[in-house]
Length: 115
Image (tube, rainbow, N blue to C red; front, side):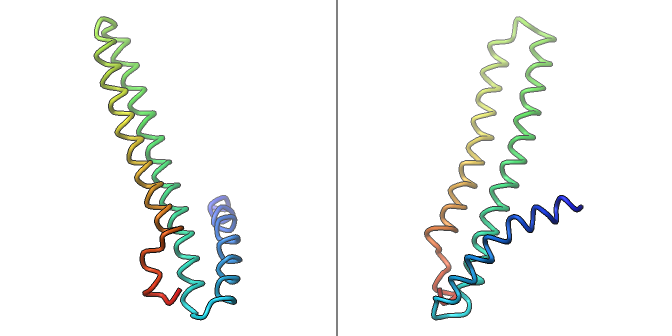
């Protein structure tokens, strides 16, 4: 639990500092809060996507190795299916990265918060 709190502090400290700076220079009070929420959401979203993808890739690779150990003659087909599955898993992380970049740099909801 202490590590989770330390990780949240490490993520939130720069975001809050940047948000305070943006709010001080901005003309609207919601701009700083919006910026903080965008940074935290993008960071947590990408972290969760990466963690889940890593777990999924480990499970896929482990299952493929077990299948190859049971039937070595089917190794090329198993390897092809494994690589296809890994590509699909990795594409989901790339989509999460794209959404994080959109939240950080494009700011589609910025007008609603006065930023």
